[in-house]
Length: 167
Image (cartoon, rainbow, N blue to C red):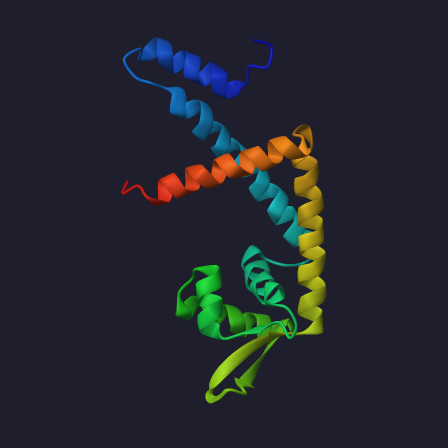
């Protein structure tokens, strides 16, 4: 086959070395791993070009997705970004220092705090997501829209299967 890649060569070598094992999963998961590395670099580049760290993008993106006024409690930010509350406190402090968010008293709970994105934060996160989507569209350009949708469906199914596994 003319479209063979490095994964095919690796799997072929393993099949010779260990013919007793089923290497079919390597065809999928080795490619997913390699593709993930490419996407990671693309994401990092999009964020760096917008002068953001990945974690900064994650917090600002959670606020951006909320819609105007782009505010959430620290607890909801923890949930949205899947980090500890201590980590989130540190991240909020650093984003405040950079002028990307500010802390406000929660109008519904005088003891509570809301984290609100500033116009500077909005500008940065919008630039980063635009760069990211543009780059990812180019990366997926070899697939039709139908193929991209099918791949997305298959990957969701795989993720759900993995989430249900106790490995």
